[in-house]
Each structure stands twice: as C-alpha cells, then as structure tokens.
Amino acid sequence: MARQLIIGAGLLAALIIFPLLSPWSTVILTVALCEGLAALGILVLLRAGQVSFGHGLYFAFSAYVVAFMAAARFGHEVLILVPVATAASGLLAALVGLFVVRYRAIFFGMLNLAISMVFFSLLEKLFSITGGADGKRVPRPTLAGISLERAEFELWIFYITLGLAVLAALGVARYLLSPGGKALEAIKSNETRLEYLGVSSRKVLFGAYVLSGLLAGLGGAVIALVSGHVTPELAYWVRSGEFVFIAILGGVGGVVGPFLGALMFQIIRGYAAVYAPETWHAVLGVMLLVIIFFAPNGLYGLMTGRKPAGTGQ
Amino acid sequence: MSALILEARDLELRFGGVQAANGASLKVHANERIAIIGPNGAGKTTFINLCTGYLKPQAGRVFFGGSDITALSPRAITRLGVGRSFQIPQLFLENTVIENLLLALSARERTWSPFLRLDRHPKTEEMWALLDIVGLKDAGRRVVRELPEGMRKLIDIAVALALEPKLIFMDEPTSGVSSHEKFQVMDTLTRALDARATTAIFVEHDMDVVARYASRVAVWAGGRIAHEGTPDEILNHPEVRETVIGVGV
Image (cartoon, rainbow over the protein chains, first blue to last red):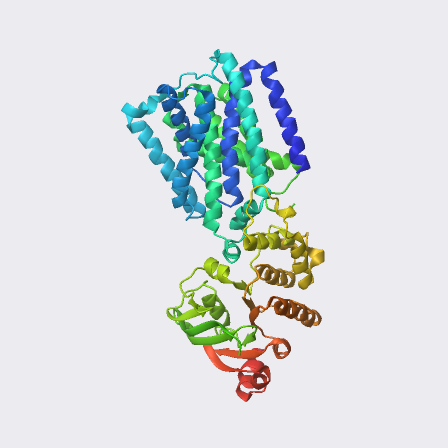
C-alpha cells in the first residue's frame, strides 16, 4: 500500500506539473486519464476473474449523453453534464448487469462485446438521431457558469479529471480492501465457497459491474467534453479492447496500474502514429506480447515488484 | 430425545449407471454427533451434497427445522443455518487465512460497508478464537495456497464454524491431520460445537475417532444407510466389521 501511494503520488505530481510545462500535452493527458478511468473499471472486473470486451458501451453512452444534453442546451454546464452522464452510464450498467452477471468467463466477455456492438450499430444506423458515422458535435459548455476559451477550458478540464481520477482510484482501492472487495476476489478464487458462506456471488459481481460502468462512463463524459465531438467509434470493439489492453499493460495489482497503462498507451500511440503510421497496431501488439511474456504483472508490477492481485501480499 | 433438526427422506440420485443415492433417509436430532462411515463410493459425500443444496435429488425431500429445503440453493440453505466443510477444502487460496475467516464473519454479520477494511474487521478477536480452535493461530497471516492439505482442511472447518451454523456437515474433518494431532483437534472441535450447541454430521474413516466422538453412527452402502446405531453397536456389528472396517478402512 505504501509503495502504491508513493508511485501514485509521484505520478500525480508529474501530471500536475507537465501540462504547465507543455500545454500541448493537456488534451493527450486528459484522454489518457479518461482511458485510465475506463481501464480502472476493467481492473475491478478482472479482480473477479471476469473480462469485459464491451466497456466501450458505457464510455460511448456517457459521451453521447453529454453530446445530446449539450446540443439541446439542457444543462450546458460541465458540473451538470459530467455527473448526469456518469449516472446515466451507471444506470445502463445496472440494467445490462442484471443480465450479464449470470455468466462467467468467455460468456461474460462475449456478451458484453455483443451488447456494445449492438449499441455501436444503433449509433451508426440511426443517422437522423445520432448523426451516424459522422457523430455529433459537442459545443463547449460553461464551467461553473463561466465561458472559457479553448486552451483555458482544456486545462481546467484536465485538472478536474485528474482530481476525479485520484478520487476514483482511492475509492476503488478502498473498496478492494473492504469485505465486498475481498468477496469480489473470491468469485475468481472459489465461487462455491462464497455461496456456502451465504453470499450471492451475482450480487457481488453486480455491484462491481455497476462500479465499472460508472468509471467507464466518467471517462466517456470527459472525453466528449475535451474532444468536442463524439462518434460511434467510442463504442466499437477495438475501443473496448484497448481498455483491456491498457489494464493489462499497466497491471491490475494496484489502482495506479490502469493510469500508468493509459499514459504508456498514449505515448506508444503518439510515437507510433508519427514513426509507423501504417503499422502502429502491430507496435501495440508487440508491446502487449512483451508485457505478457516478460512482465505479466504490467508496468505497476515492474515498478513495485509485486505479484498479481489477490496473492495476499 | 431432543428436537428433530434435519430429516432426509428417501433421497434418490443417479449419475448415469451409478445410483449415488438410493432411498437415503436419515433423521438428525439437535446436538447429536453423527458419524457416517462406509466404503469409498458408498454415497456419503453425495448425501452431504444433497442435504446442502449442491446436488438436487431426483426423488425424496430434505427438511431442516421443519422446512422443506430440497429445492433451495446452497446459499439459502447456508443462511438457514446449515454449514459445511468439504472433502477437498474449499477456500480462497490466494488470500491469507485471516482473510478467509474474516470474509466468513462478514458474511455472517452482513458487514459489507465499502468503508470498512477487512483487516480491521470488528470481529477480528473472534477470528483469532476460531483459529485457536483448530490450532492454527500461527498460520493466520499465511496465504492459504502455501499451506498443506491437512491445515487447509482445518481452516475449512473454521470457516464453516464462523457462520455459527445450527447444523454442520464435515466431510472427513481429520483426513490429512497427523494421527497424533487428530484427537487434539477433535477434542477442541467438539468443545467448540458443544459451546455453540451445534449439531454435527461427519464423514469419517478413522474408527477410533468414530468410537470416541460420535453419539450415533450411520453405515452407508449402495447410496443408503445399511446400519445405524451407537458406536458400540456398529463397531461390533459382524457385517460392518467385515464389509466396512475390514475392507474399507
């Protein structure tokens, strides 16, 4: 825990300072934080041994809620848009969760993928409502009632997202140490014993699923604000796969891992897009192979020398 | 005779060509210590699985405290007050011993607050007392995966006891425990069961343990009870001596 705090504090300090030194990095870092939030949701599910290949659903749903509300000039305010869109995502996760928590392993993963792809198709096909593949523009909202210039707005959004990411990470860390968090790990370890403790593994997983939907939704709401545009691509399976990739890259041994993974992912993507624009997915693939073979506990594991979560260490 | 706590009535279960339960019936009264003995494959574990909801019988009923629990899930049966330990211990292997027990105590107390750290659980003292019962206080902070089977077996029992069940099924509770420690463990376990007024049914292959700790013995054969009686009656029964004690044990 102490190491996690040190790494987290170091990362936080770097993130606070960096945009002030390099203003060009503000949006990239905000995107990394958003993806880190979604990957944190994946981490929660991975603690139960379940992988979702469909969390782009919550990311996109929340982003579109922001887009619709902003376009309708309803609650055209960051402090309203973000909480409402995140809550809407949580609600959707609760509805989907009622169904998917009955399944485990590959069925859980593929059901999530299937539902997210249905949503992706709806976003693409319902052109008159969603704007189809072109997506929807998100007019820049006010922040605490103040209309800001783009650069100022992006900087403020970055720091707000950073604050939310810290709160989310601390909250998830606390949850994972609680009896409920340990019960979540128990689903992976021995669901039979959990049932024989009189505990509903479905309820435990349901709670974690809603939490992961909220985290992905929070990321999606912010990304809609900083990018100023939402497209169905946010719900596409590649996006969902990226969240899993980021979680594995960063490591699931601690809540800092997904954010480390998201930052590294953005760095790789940024450099690969410049130096290997046609093959950057191959670069990511090779990176993932290296992580799996040589650092199975991800970047976080490399930094702490920790074993994967749930080893009791 | 004290109150009837569990009644299994004519349980039937067939796996393909194997009749695992063949009209199995048993009445259990409060505070009894019933030992189930019999050769391997006689249907002893199947009977426990049927009574605790892991398996559903194709015919017959199970009553606990007068209520029909035949169709209930293991979770619902556990919540009614039926605990169990397993032939192969069912624990959270990646967690420490104390985490396993504290999770059981959380389940019993329904303490699921996300603001409570499991390692600062208000029932920590009770957790150490439970570990003391099975003589594993020193192993508390170790990860279960690192422990030998005999120790896991005892932790499995402690986890079941943590739920304060009215009735506990224990599947070979002392297997894997060294012979000189068996009586010590059973003595402490019996004291704990007495203190909690917990009725116990245990599958056992060690006839010394059966003779010393059972108040009644049920001999299983072919998926049902072949003989039933006091330890003295059963262990001196010629047929049991020949078919169970002579061959199976």
